[in-house]
Image 1 (tube, rainbow, N blue to C red):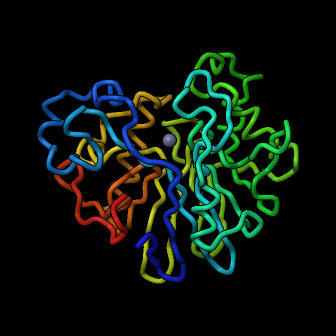
Image 2 (spheres, rainbow, N blue to C red; image 1 turned 135 degrees about the horizontal axis):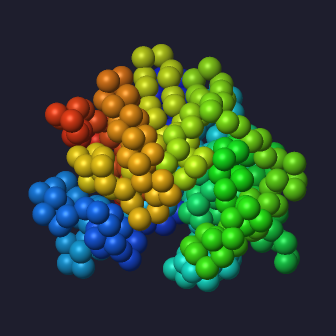
Length: 299
Ligand SMILES: [Zn+2]
C-alpha cells in the first residue's frame, strides 16, 4: 500500500529512486559518533543503513496529496537529463518518475500545486523537463510554492559559492524556468493552502526550508522535508546532516517540529525515509523515540 488517508486528505507516496546514498554515517552526519549508531542498529538496518557496506540508504520520493478537490505534490525529486557535475550519481538520469506518478493516478496537467520544501537538487528536479534544448515546467497548470529566502539564497547571482557544489545548475534548470513562466508564488513565514494544509517556515537545513502541516478532522501530520534524513535523528535530534546550512537553527527547528509532532500525535513524513516512510514519534527524556511506523509498504 502506498497511500493513507488523513482526515479528508489522501496521501500517496510516489518514489523516484531509493537505495544507498554513497555516504557512511560519519560522512552524512559528521558530528555523530559511531557508538550512537551501533546503539540503534536494530532500527536502522536494513532500511536506513546497509549492514554489509555501512552506507546510509535513502529514498527520493514525492508525497502526492489530494485535498479539497486539488492535487498537490510535495517535492519533485532529482529529475531527468540534468547536468550535475558535482553530483554525478544524480546527473543524466532517465527514470520513469512520471510513469510512477501516472500509476498513482496523476497526469502532469492534473497537478494544481507544487510545493518545494526547499530548493536543493533532490527536491526541485521534476519542476521542469527537457523539451528540445529547453527546460520547461513539467506541471503546466500548477502554482509552484517556494519560500522567498531559499529563492534568494540559491540564486547563483546572489551566492557565488553554489558553483562547484552539488547544487550547481539547479536554480538555472529547475527553478528559473518555472519563475519565467510566471508559475512561482513566493511566500514567507507561513502560507495557507486550504483548510487542511499550510506551509510553515522551518529554517536551518536551508534558509527557506519549510514543512507542510496537515490538520483534518482529528488527524495531524507534518511533512518534514529534510529536517530529518534518518530515524537516527529522532533519537538524536542534535545531529545535523552535512547538508545543513545553519547548524544551530537546524537543530533547534528539528527539536521544535519533533516536539510538536509528539505532543499532537502527528504523523511525521520526512522527504527521504525508506522503509515505511512515515512514523509517529514520542518524547523520551530530552530526546524522542519511534512510537509507530505508518502502514505504508516498505520501500
Ligand atoms: Zn533532500
